[in-house]
Amino acid sequence: MACRLSHGWPTIALYGGALALGTAALQWLDYQRMVRSNSDDVVIFVIALAFLALGVFAGMRLLPRAGPRAFDGNPAGREALGISPREYEVLLELAAGRSNKEIARALGVSPNTVKTHVARLYAKLKATRRTDAVAKARALGIVR
Image 1 (spheres, rainbow, N blue to C red):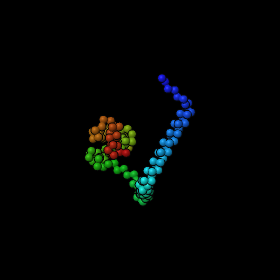
Image 2: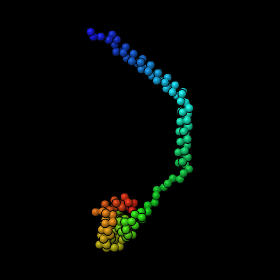
Image 3: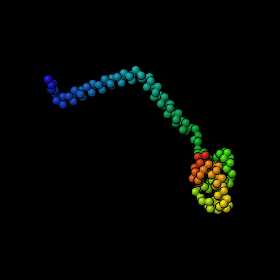
């Protein structure tokens, strides 16, 4: 024997809405009870937030800001690798993307001398090509 609903959709929606409103009212009352019983904790939390904001504000205003560190070329790293001052000049030119002939003209040496310096840089940086050498030098902080 099948049981048929004698109520239509509007009646069901009305009962559902009444149940939802009742549940919301109970939740509101529970929230009010919780706020009243924990009001001291809420006040302490608000005061802590105010002090946090004051501390951050004062810190930003009173403490000096650290500026960007000056680039020094990591002299300790260069010394550990055994890179000579002339090889360092060649490495800077490599990082600038210059060819061996351009480097030779800029430094006043022959292209063969530049090739020798580049080969020594490859060995010291354990690189196989110019881009590897420059990438490893950048990772070590030797060039920008």
